[in-house]
View 1 (cartoon, rainbow, N blue to C red):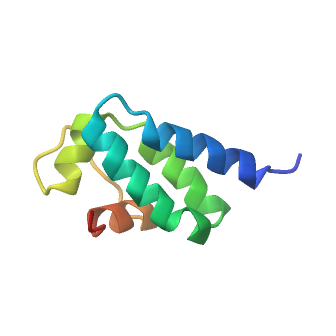
View 2: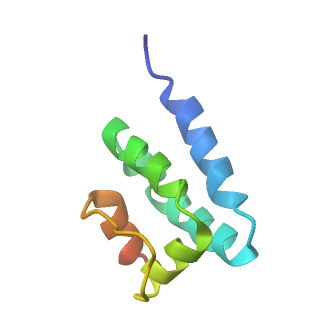
Length: 85
Protein backbone atom coordinates (compact mmCIF):
# COMPACT_ATOMS: atom_id res chain seq x y z
CA UNK A 1 0.00 0.00 0.00
CA UNK A 2 1.42 3.36 -0.99
CA UNK A 3 1.36 6.36 1.29
CA UNK A 4 -0.42 9.44 -0.08
CA UNK A 5 1.82 12.18 1.32
CA UNK A 6 -0.40 15.00 0.06
CA UNK A 7 -3.45 13.53 1.79
CA UNK A 8 -1.48 13.21 5.04
CA UNK A 9 -0.33 16.83 4.73
CA UNK A 10 -3.92 18.02 4.20
CA UNK A 11 -5.03 16.22 7.36
CA UNK A 12 -2.13 17.74 9.30
CA UNK A 13 -2.95 21.25 8.05
CA UNK A 14 -6.60 20.83 9.02
CA UNK A 15 -5.76 19.43 12.47
CA UNK A 16 -3.25 22.23 13.07
CA UNK A 17 -5.68 25.01 12.22
CA UNK A 18 -8.81 23.71 13.95
CA UNK A 19 -7.74 22.87 17.49
CA UNK A 20 -10.44 24.41 19.62
CA UNK A 21 -8.59 27.47 20.88
CA UNK A 22 -7.67 30.38 18.64
CA UNK A 23 -4.24 30.71 20.23
CA UNK A 24 -3.27 27.13 19.38
CA UNK A 25 -4.94 27.37 15.94
CA UNK A 26 -2.63 30.25 15.10
CA UNK A 27 0.49 28.84 16.72
CA UNK A 28 0.22 25.33 15.29
CA UNK A 29 -1.03 26.63 11.94
CA UNK A 30 2.04 28.85 11.58
CA UNK A 31 4.32 26.05 12.77
CA UNK A 32 3.02 23.49 10.25
CA UNK A 33 3.00 26.03 7.41
CA UNK A 34 6.67 26.72 8.04
CA UNK A 35 7.92 23.14 8.30
CA UNK A 36 5.43 20.84 6.55
CA UNK A 37 7.19 20.69 3.17
CA UNK A 38 10.55 20.01 4.83
CA UNK A 39 9.42 16.85 6.62
CA UNK A 40 9.86 13.25 5.50
CA UNK A 41 7.34 10.45 6.10
CA UNK A 42 8.79 9.57 9.53
CA UNK A 43 8.61 13.21 10.60
CA UNK A 44 5.04 13.52 9.31
CA UNK A 45 4.03 10.53 11.43
CA UNK A 46 5.69 12.14 14.46
CA UNK A 47 3.78 15.34 13.70
CA UNK A 48 0.49 13.43 13.57
CA UNK A 49 1.21 11.98 17.03
CA UNK A 50 2.25 15.43 18.23
CA UNK A 51 -1.05 16.94 17.10
CA UNK A 52 -2.97 14.38 19.18
CA UNK A 53 -1.63 16.02 22.36
CA UNK A 54 -4.09 18.36 24.05
CA UNK A 55 -3.74 22.13 23.67
CA UNK A 56 -2.92 22.79 27.31
CA UNK A 57 0.11 20.48 27.32
CA UNK A 58 1.30 21.79 23.94
CA UNK A 59 0.96 25.39 25.12
CA UNK A 60 2.84 24.64 28.36
CA UNK A 61 5.56 22.74 26.49
CA UNK A 62 6.01 25.62 24.02
CA UNK A 63 6.28 28.13 26.86
CA UNK A 64 8.59 26.01 29.01
CA UNK A 65 5.98 25.36 31.69
CA UNK A 66 5.17 22.11 33.51
CA UNK A 67 3.25 19.54 31.45
CA UNK A 68 1.19 16.51 32.44
CA UNK A 69 3.02 14.32 29.93
CA UNK A 70 6.61 13.55 29.00
CA UNK A 71 7.66 14.92 25.60
CA UNK A 72 10.10 12.78 23.62
CA UNK A 73 13.34 14.21 22.30
CA UNK A 74 12.56 14.11 18.59
CA UNK A 75 12.72 16.40 15.57
CA UNK A 76 9.12 17.63 15.74
CA UNK A 77 9.22 18.45 19.45
CA UNK A 78 12.54 20.25 19.04
CA UNK A 79 11.30 22.25 16.05
CA UNK A 80 8.17 23.26 17.95
CA UNK A 81 10.02 24.13 21.14
CA UNK A 82 12.37 26.44 19.18
CA UNK A 83 9.71 27.84 16.82
CA UNK A 84 9.44 31.63 16.94
CA UNK A 85 5.86 32.74 16.36
